Image (tube, rainbow, N blue to C red):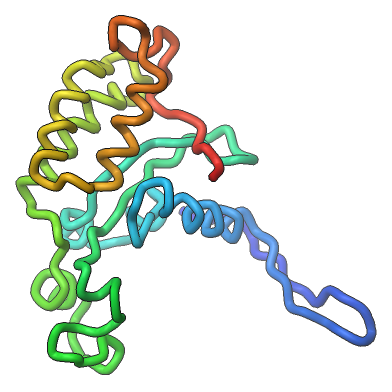
Length: 194
């Protein structure tokens, strides 16, 4: 539930005044927008936003990581919706109909008009790899060997999948010498700033 307040106000001098907004939510939105580059995604959603979606739409998204962001000690699960390339390139659909001009339900928009570019079977396989990577709520069930094996299968299906590559890079960089998760793995990591 979103319980933090948003502070807004004018800042500047008598000659120039700008509106400014301060809130943990504004900071989170900025961090997620920056993190889209790390994961190679067009969209990243926090677990707070994900929880507000209908179950049908949540099934079209996939978990990509669990992280802490700068300024917070509480882990946040990150999700993406795999936007089809045709929408990310031009903001229009194949028949050049502007998305904003359509009158269609949210459900039909995401399930029929612009379905995710990753299949349900891919999302399920990716989720399995993420479950091995994260290892449950506190990370004590992590199996990075299995996670890497499953995520490499994901890359065979979609060779340039950004979220899969990102997690495989984390595993490669942070695994112990035998390839297993660090002994103190808590089931999340700090989100690196890039």
